[in-house]
Amino acid sequence: MNLLSGLLVDPAPVLVAVPAASAVLLALVPSYRVGAFLNVAACGLTFALALLLLGAPRIQGPFLIVDDLNIVFVVLNTFVAFTTAWFSAGYIAHELETGRLTPLNLRFYHAMYQVLLGAMTLALLSNNLGVMWVAIEVATLTTVLMVGLYRTEAAIEAAWKYFMLGSVGIALALFGTILVYMVAQPVVGEGTDGMIWSVLMKHAREFDPALLNVAFVFLLLGYGTKVGLAPLHAWLPDAHSEGPTPISAVLSGLLLNVALFAVLRFKSLLAAHPGTLAPGPLMMAMGLGSLLLAGFMLYRRRDIKRLFAYSSIEHMGIIAFAFGLGGPLANFAGLLHMTMHSLTKSAIFFAVGHACQVKGTQELAKIRGLTTSHPLLGWSLVAGVVAIAGLPPAGVFMSEFLVVTSAFAARPWLALILVLGLLIAFGALMVKLSAIAFGEPSPGTDPVKASYVPMGVHLALVFAAGLYLPPELVAWFRHVAAVLG
Image 1 (cartoon, one colour):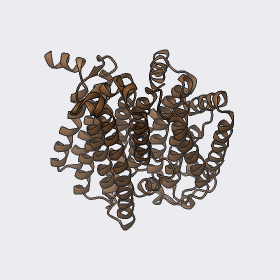
Image 2 (image 1 turned 90 degrees about the vertical axis):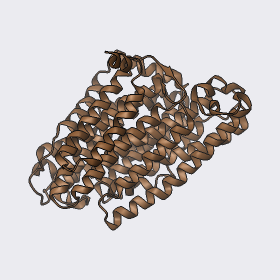
Image 3 (image 1 turned 180 degrees about the vertical axis):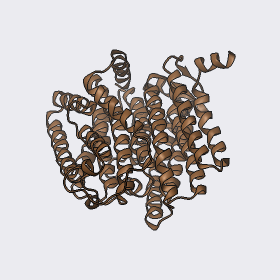
Image 4 (image 1 turned 30 degrees about the horizontal axis):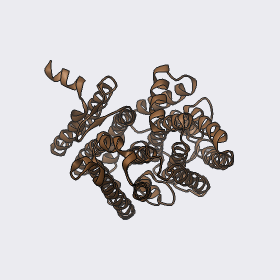
């Protein structure tokens, strides 16, 4: 009873401890089937604990913090991690049967999956700048190892590229973090207080604005690399293409959000000081640049996973633009679009993973007529692409509509660029989808033994959100949007 009461009061430490303990356990389990089951169970438990945060008191400790902003990210991340682990169980079993992975690879994969989930959760719940930086670095190194899991020449190259560019980004973020501490030290004194979010926000108006501006530029470039914003995006297509498909889902649906969360934290710090540089224009410029670059690059992709990797860059650009625009409506739209993108893109990668396995390739030219050869899989992919392209009644349509309307109200000329980018990306996705889903089917095998439930749940939530948003969710997002400024 005391344990249950403690969880209800502060589930945050347990949220970090469960993945850490699960990683150790999974590293010792020799059986793939047992490991896959334990991985799903551990992720389900973590998601259940995340739901407890909704009713838990808001806490500000020296290391962990629970507030309305990070609860949104934690609940979304743990849910997608749970459904991806569910999808992963069947997907990875097929990779074992075909000889692409060995039992030892799978033990490593499941253990690293839990390390990644724990690191991301710690980054979101951290009240300390240094701890958050370390957690994001651990998450990056973990995904580097998982991207290279197949041990092919292309996979190793993609992992190395990710490591090099990610290291540059995290180094810039570290320098920005050090600058923030230097800004805080004359005001709050030496020690850990200069690294604690809640303390920094209380004294934000007293900081040197010039040095704070420089710090934000480094932090935006550093964590922006992890978000996948242009021109810092080069690692992302290779990582998606060469790593296991569940990792592509995790990268697009989870890790990009964690890096975005770090940017939003620092943006809030800057916004609390009236004398600092407005962070919005920088974020809007990078967001629009990412949208336009990705939109044009979609037309030239020949690998299906690279195609949707560039789609992730496009949508992270839209989200960065919305948060850069700021204000209650744009921030609300950014939160909603982030949620819809995570659910939709992970569902698309679930479908893409199955499609690559039944067709035996990732080449777009060899994946044809899915709706004829594999109807359930083909139409599920159609639903996902229709949703991510922003067609009604999907939730992505609603969030993009809110971003566009808020942009026209505040920055009409930028809104025109935004709409142009959306139309360019929409055209590319429709062209690619027509070939993948329809026409003469390319050769393939029977459907693999994998669950379609995670994909179905995600798509159902996305289309339901386009028709109806619960008042409680709207009120919650409105409150967080107001906090973001």
